[in-house]
Amino acid sequence: MQSKFRAVSLSYKNAPVEIREIIALDDAEIHALLLKLKEFFSITDTLILSTCNRTEVYYAHELDLSIEIIKLIGLEKGLIDAVSYLEYFEIFHEDKESIDHLFKVAMGLEAQVVGDMQISNQVKRAYQASVDLDMAGPFLHRLMHTIFFTNKRVVQETAFRDGAASMSYAAVELIEELTSNTYQPRILLIGVGEIGEDVAKNMVYLPEAKVTITNRTFEKAQILGAELGFEVIPFEDCIEAIKEADVVVSSIMKSEPFITKKLVKSLDIPSYKLFIDLSVPRSIETDVEDVPGVLLYNVDNIRSKASETLEKRMAAVPEVERIIAESISEFYNWKKEMMVSPVINKLKNSLEQIRLEEMERYLKNGNPEHMAIIDKITKSMMQKIIKVPVVQLRAACKRNEADQMIDFITDLFDLEKKPENK
Image 1 (spheres, rainbow, N blue to C red):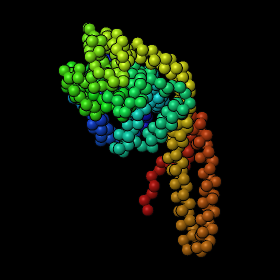
Image 2: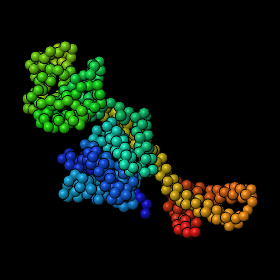
Image 3: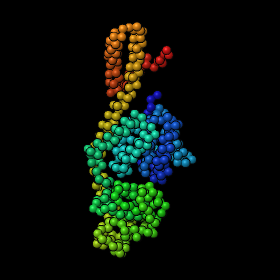
Image 4: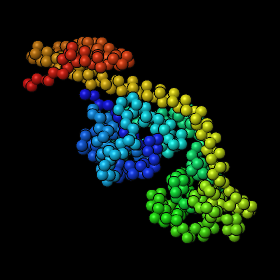
């Protein structure tokens, strides 16, 4: 029975954030799950991808292990009845749909924000985790390197990855743009709800910045700060931190503005202070811009910038899909070649065994010089004999008829027979 490449996927398309949070796997859990799959099912080609938007397991196996994999995820997460979450999973049973899905995920076509730049790095890390545990065979190696090459083509040949299409990344891109002449800009992020957390994660793209985060629930800020390597301060120290910061990003839920014009007027602003308000309702009074040196951007400004980029990205989608189709076609040509390679090797070995046996039978006491000539002649004959079946096998691959040709050649040359013990 031949292995099939399959996938088990839970994503934002089918599961709300409350479910995604329950199923999401951290690095240690991914490591443990990979080991279990290796130990229990002897899987060699496996990839586990877990982000805030999706948790997916790709694997090659003769059997459909989808339910078992969901149960193992549940075991890793301490869930009593993991199968009760089955409705949130999408299962890809066939090679073509699984490979197609992985390409689209890796390129960002399946992302919540189309063209999300983070996903390609997340896929690379997932692949590295498999490689580290020796769970990437020739199939997965080739597939992933085809994906990485496709990603490079998408970046070089299309506008699909240009600009910032998510609000959080657009905010970070704006900060980078406006602080380009500031040495190690001091950034204060107030509030780490869903948007604030996303902004914080995008801040890693500003390696020179000194980022401080604060939140009303201090423990949540501490966990995020530890993960990203940012300084964390208690919420009650927020006003002092605003005085020190070059950039203040506010993402808190409040019925009235938290940062007022009166507060901003009391600050000593030597050159500039940038305020970014990502809250709805707004948490920064709009007239703070009247204070000299103050720049204010809100959700609408940033969303407008992100929307323009998104339009360009959507226009580039057909071109991206064309590049993906070319890459998948090339990969399938290699996969077909791989499918017939074992038969070609068996045929070569079978003919070589016959050649060696006949040489031994008739030339036991032969002249070494004559033996060398006969050896050369018989090798040449064998190469010519094997050429036609090999050419026919490869041609059958291109016609998608490899299975029939493999069966025919296997029967014709009796390639499944067990070698005799001598």
